[in-house]
Image 1 (tube, one colour):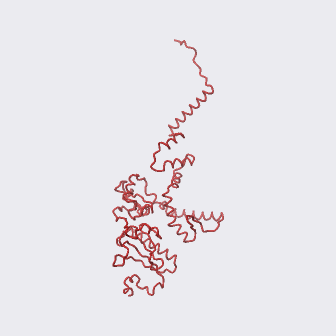
Image 2 (cartoon, rainbow, N blue to C red):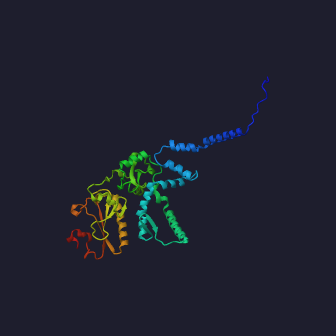
Image 3 (cartoon, rainbow, N blue to C red):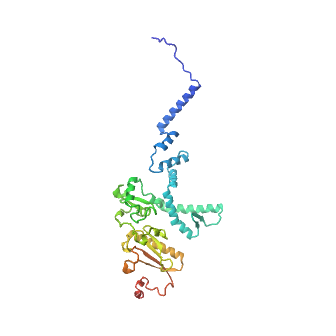
Length: 363
């Protein structure tokens, strides 16, 4: 049966309708792109940043800003470099490392000069060719060293393959009082890591019972070769009545090594007389831990070499410690004397440390 209606209607798209159609097509494309590629509009991004983004650290806005600066896309390595430049703790760590080692060594050799916070190369005005040659030699030395040692030169930064939850990390650091449970170093002096007592490579679990706080140096030394629980070691506290526990004394240190530091003796027997002192308050040499004694031994060797390099007249050393009142100990905090000796500094040095009982020195 035929319809009594007229012929089918014909719709003609005029210009305004064309614009509407284009907007409809673009809208559909945007919606599809958002669905397929998790696309976000500028307005949605701003809304997320202002209203929806909850923060426990600076990481999220830092990453978004880095991507914007990079034109929208960046590699993981590029993003990591941006994060490193904003990590104040890492900047402080390397400032301290620079002052402790390369600055001291290069100054001693006359390579650089320091004036306040400024470090200057001592070489005169360099030509373009000379600068290029210096860069090339430095790069060759760098690559040769890396080739020999591999990424192991940074292995203390690669200890944690997976992050330890912040809540667990907080419990460990709080329980350790913000100090290394091996050497007693505080977080102000060196980064404190949360270490697996039984390494994960040997089946250790990420749980409170298997975690301890170690400074970056102790953790690097331990690596995954040891499962000692340092939480049960002697407490790393201080004695308010002990002059060697005075926090200001650490600022006078001429050198530090893990759990020990060295200062100049206030009443030197000879010029250059130094004391090596454990950070942890402990009565004498016999109560020092093996780790503290090893650190002290390493520091003694470094200081001995430095003293001889700075004073060609030094031809010998006395190393000693007084343990107990009867042995002449006046400060009840372990310390080791490093006393440089020069020919002619006394009439008859024969017998050395036997001189603690003068009538027994000569034999």
